[in-house]
Every structure is written in C-alpha cells, then in structure tokens.
Length: 547
Image (cartoon, rainbow, N blue to C red; front, side, top):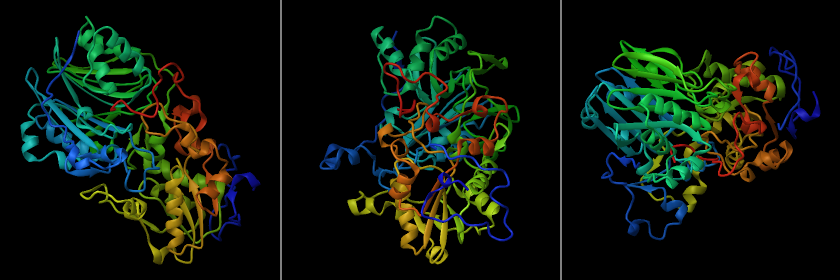
C-alpha cells in the first residue's frame, strides 16, 4: 500500500482472518484529498430584555431567545465544529388535515433545523392562518395552535440560522400582503447573488423588513406585472445558487428547485392530496407515497384545475449536494433511487478498502456516521461497537452556560463507553472534519476512556472550501484542510492515523448519475469546483436564504 494513502503512526497490517482483502476493488490515491408589507408584525420577537443579557459577551447574548439559551447552533455544546444542516420545507395541497400533516412532516425534518419553525395554512379562496416560533416543532406547536391553523393547503419550515441571526423575524414561512393578495414563502438553500438583487430592489424603492433572502423573492413577485406563475418563473430565472422553494397564495401552491438540483425536494401523494418535502423520510410518518423528485429547474403548480409541471430553466449541470449523502439527510431518506443508509454503508466499505488498519473495534460518531461504521466493520471483519453514545437531550438548556460548561460541551453531547473502548485499538468513523476542534475533543474523549489507539477515518474528502449554497461553513481560513496536510491534521486532532475517503471512492459509494459530471454531485467544498458562478462582486457565501 502506498505510503501516502494513510497519514499517521498507525501501522497498516494484513486483514484479519476471515475478512475481505482491502485490495478487492483496487486502491485510489489520496487527494486533498412598489412596496410589499409583512402580513403581521405584531408577533413578539421573544428576545430577552437588555437587563437579562447585560454583561453577557455578544456571542452569548445573541443566542438568548425567550426563556432559554438556544443551542441549536451547538455554540455551547462543544460541537460548533460540525457543519450545520441547512433547513427543511414541507408542503400540503388538498388535505383537510394540512396543518397536522405539516406538524408531523416538520417533526421528521427536525434534524435539518432546530432553532425555529412555522406553518402557514390556507383554504381555497380562504384566509391565511399561521404561527411561527423559536424552538423545536414540539415546543412551538400544541393542539390549540394546530386547531387554529385551518385549511386544506399548508407550507411549513424548520430552520437553522447559519449566519447567527437567531431571531423570530427571520423564522419562516414569511407571510406578506401585496396587490395580488396574501403570499407565503419558505425556502431551503442560499442565493449567491441575493445582495445584488436586494440592492437593485432597494434602489428602485423596495423596503425590506427582514434580512432573509426569501423576502427578495416576494419583492420580485410583487413588482412583476405578470400573473403569479409567470412572475415566479421570471424571479427564479434571475437567481444564482442552490434552493428549494414552496410558495403559497389563497389559491395556488408552487414548488420549485434550482437549475442544478443542489437542494433536494420530493413530491408524494396521500389520497388525493399532494405532499412536498425536503426529504422522503417525512412521507413515512404521515403515510404518504413517494412519487418522484422535483427536477432541477422545474416548477410544479397546484391550483383548482389540478397539477401542472413547467420549466423556468433548462437543466444545467446536475449537482446534488454531496453532503446530503454524507451527512445531512436522514438515513431512512432516499435521494432519487439512492437510499442514504445504503450509500453511507458503501462509504464505510470503501474506506475500509482504501485505508484498512488493524484494530479491535470500529465505532461511529453518532448519528450520521453509524451507517458508515457498520459498513467499515462488515468489510474488514473488525467488530462494530457502540463506543460513543449521543445524549439526545442536550439541545437546549435553561441555564446560562459557564466557561467550564462550554469546555465540557463534548461530554454533554457525547459519552465514550469506557468498558467498550478501554484497552482497545479503535477505528473512529466520522463524516467530516471542519475546523478540527471537535475531532480533537472526540479523539481525546476516547483516549480518556482508555483507548490504546484511535484511528480516524472520514467518509468524505478533506473539506477545504466554503459552501455557497446553504451549508454554514466558516471562512476558508478557518477550514483546517485548506491550510494543513493530512499529516498535519492528524497531529492536530491527536489521532494515531487519519484517512479521508478519496473523491473516486466517494463517487463510487454514492453511485449517482452515470455519464454526468461528477456523477451528478456537487463537490465544491472538496474540490473548489462549483456548478454556478460564485466569485463576483457581493457574492454571498457561508449563509443561507433563511438569514
């Protein structure tokens, strides 16, 4: 095996007896690797009075919302190094229990956003009813709230604030009044050219009420002399970035994805009703049947006359976000024909083929790396064990975190099972390394529990470039892989060895579209090769349309 395949002091030894050989599928070289008005502005922001935040550092004070310290950003959990999920959208057209279905659908998408959520409902020709709040779906909605959201159509949203704007004003769906009536909009993703469009609109008289990209779309629709559908198509044709939109009026629901398909959206059926969601896992909980993915550059319109499918842009380079496969989407979701659990298992198997190391146990960093860890263990014959346990109830705390608490954040979030790892050589599988701080803490957590060796295996290539399409990534200078070699990263995280899955290995594991560029995946965060223009004046990165 070439020396450059694995960085670190760990030895590369023969495969354990009875396991498949690491060379069965060949080896890959390692690579670096007029004005529009808000519908209702009377809602409380939930922000604490200044008297309660006085004396807090700005970085802490801004996360206090209502009566709780918001840890949706993982700022106090010690896990701020992990990538943040984008957001999630869910829509229903033509079901008498639209609000309740949206509640369960958003609950299934909770992993995509834990800071705020909202649902807006409408009956055909009726009024809008909506509620938004800071917190988890189960915290924001109760039976009385859901009963007040009458109507057969609904759109809903769960949100992370990737730029730190954790406030109710930006919670979605955003609801507006304009000359055509009421308009509700929610989105997942990021508009790279939003600052340019916003400046043009402001210079021509538009007045913005939020910092959200989503409001830009509302202004573009409101200013158009065309009917709603044509106005939406014209607006989308101007956008650069990755996005999945749901737009609703009293009579119409519109679903659309960006021309590259960067941000996923699926369509399903429940009886005569149509369902839209960021992930197919939300269909299972409500008993809906998956129909198909919303296509890149497609706009689907549902109204009194039924459903019609149109295009606002030709299919460009298909580029589904690779991190959806690696990390973001739930393992029980499918993207196209690809199941996420199966894809992640294959990533683990491919890691084993590329970077076998003799060890006693394999463990995964929960939850996104469990499937890959199982695949690595199956491929090598090394037993899979639960060496790390995630505490699922640390998302929010009612106490102000002290410095000591922050320093112990990883132990609040993760625990090493001492009796499992003590005296063992451990292969630790994770999905990515961003800054490196969390990886260091987890490796040390295993060492403190008695692990003799810790060999880190990552199911993605080195994350060396920012994302412009809705994933919250730091400045390039803060990405450890942008300035350090694999060996330097290994030393920085205190691992005995370190290996990142190669780009060919990732493409082989995911599968994807044969014959398409990078098999229809966006690998920009790994390769610096983006499917859209990103480097122009006022280009917007490291944020999402929710901010």
